[in-house]
Length: 168
Image (cartoon, rainbow, N blue to C red; front, side, top):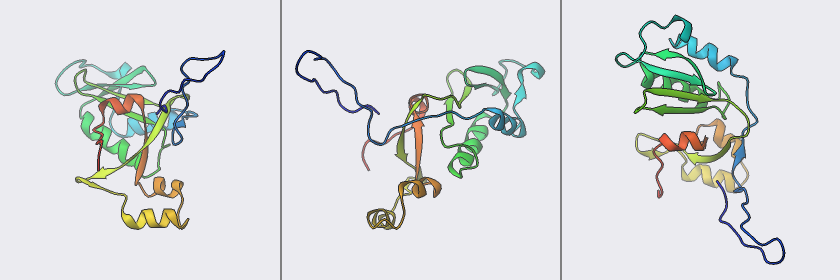
């Protein structure tokens, strides 16, 4: 997300960090819509929880605040991710599944640097040669690749738990 460091000459010499060209800084979105979705998907609010730390239940956090628990965190993450890729929730919402700590964390706050990554489904990259040709001929733009679910933005927290290929 940060371009390689450069060292200028002169009085102000030292490392200078430049934001990568395709990076995006989140402007934030209100968590109310996400919280109502979480309730629809069966997240038990913290006030109503009676079985902390048992079985497959995972703690659910929104912007660092413990919101509740969910009995099937894998399904919860998959469903919220699907909604983000369909643009039914903001693209900048981060979804972190921490299996080791039995946690699911969602972030909607501003100031998180995010970078675009190609989406892979069933072992195949969704971006095809015809999409690249359309981009080159200006038949579609970058925003349309986001709307088609070919590319998504991930922040540092989400990248920690994502499987990211280094080569095609």
